[in-house]
Length: 220
Image (cartoon, rainbow, N blue to C red):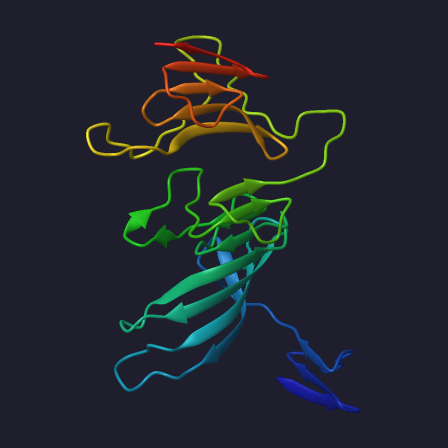
């Protein structure tokens, strides 16, 4: 029997459905995987499939693996996989049918492709804070350790740790900081865009300006 009804339960491919909707059967695939269930929503006009969407259940032919894929069609009638849930590894893919990590995003940002093993994020990023005020803001409370670390583990060549850059043009721009270190609200060390360094002051007027209490020393 191709279908059956059993006290409010519906079976497709089975005479004894145990759930409200039970589907059972075998199908041939492409040699690698089999499309077991396909739910297709047709919205496109004649000759164009823009707006068509599908939910697909795929099973691998040579492994105990099941995937749920969400796809949508372009105007050329080609279905593109938008999201994949991999039941074997527990991976989630956005823009890819074969996620290799717990979360893999295979997209492009504006006209720029995302870097290999990387991601491009538009807007502000907060770590430990829900509403970051800066492009990258890391917030936390560590009473006995450092809050963050940048660690380059390379031991050969010319390894470097951190680079900070602004668009400062020394011929036209004045003011602004390349780097500032604060304790509470007080600046302990600043590096201005013009190269002046201040210790104990936020307005160094020399290449190195040190302010300690009521004593100040300038080094040109």
